[in-house]
Image (cartoon, rainbow, N blue to C red; front, side):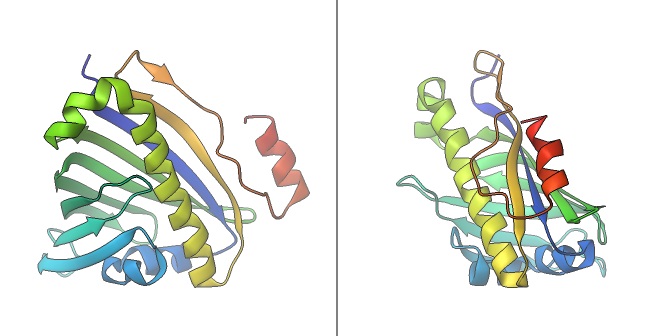
Length: 194
């Protein structure tokens, strides 16, 4: 087992259409305008007309006293439902955005399969894996909240779907706390799984 590998899955439910969400996610150069943890995004290389092969350099802040630099290459794109990218740099791995309509708006699921590359992170991973996971979800929850604000819609909820690290093969399915804002029947159905 490698304690330096993680699979982190989050799910956002927004009162917006998949097309609205896609329009925001498909333009990462604008992310720093609405996502506080994204410091900078620079398009380094254009891919094809659909954006496949685009390479962007991302500079991320975090809730902890460190930042990350990543080169992200778009490897799959199907508007408005699916976006996949390969990451290299301080972390190496794969990120996948899945966007789907739900009765009250859109479900945004992000799957981040990553391996730590910074030497200090690799050394401390056996001890700090839960803190690295927590940090990831602070950043993602901020993205969910601020995307909703950017779009002028409600964030219905944010949930940690699964949280895996190869350290002790633990899985956490507890949602991160956030005020659920609409659809009483939706809240009831989610509370049965949370």
